[in-house]
Length: 230
Length: 81
Image (cartoon, rainbow over all chains, first blue to last red; front, side):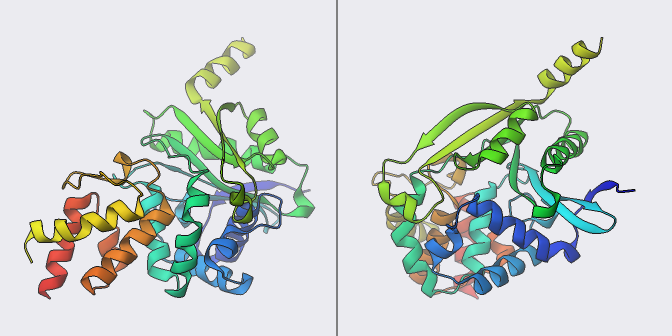
């Protein structure tokens, strides 16, 4: 009998988390921002992400502690990350920027500076003191089983237990990522805004010219479920 | 180096990287106060500051900086090492 179990990620999961981050960045396209922005090949990107994860910096999209893992009979099937933004009074974008600055080869910085204008065009700030969902990925052989939905639910439960006063959770996705959009909508998220890049060259660096911001009001959703169960 | 001198030296770096020509640098300024201070901008900002002062931050030092005041303090300490 197959049973899906959910657990927190550990150092042993770094290869799967690296794959998750890469596939989430690509959002179903062949455009990998780590490659287009920094000029790295896949091996170099895998090495870079692994090194940054190994640092175990908490509260950002490159934190092992932000990830949950779904597995079936010991086989890793999916993972998803989420964290409280600004938990240590430092934005997650700063923590990620620190890691990139520390680990990226210097020659990548010139190329990165050239692309900054195009990637900024789609930047949406994370709101402090809200939960944020980061990278998610499901192995192909496990797709269609709502694992990302299950992980989202468990992530919210875990974060809410840890920070009960926080009521909002956000997810940012590219509009080309239809499977993720459907998953989050099924999980009770609603689209609150979209950002469209006016820089056409953005498409040379990122998977799409359009980003979607989704939000879920946790307490409101719980109330709705309670009312339906009455 | 005096804190005011460090501030004078980092101001043009912040303005250039964050593309904010009139950005006022104060000790309290943080990434949350400036639109588009994303991970890429932050990476470039730190790199340019390291070049300007010929220093290299440790990751632990970087992850302690909550605002520009903290950044200036760490630069000042590193210049005295």
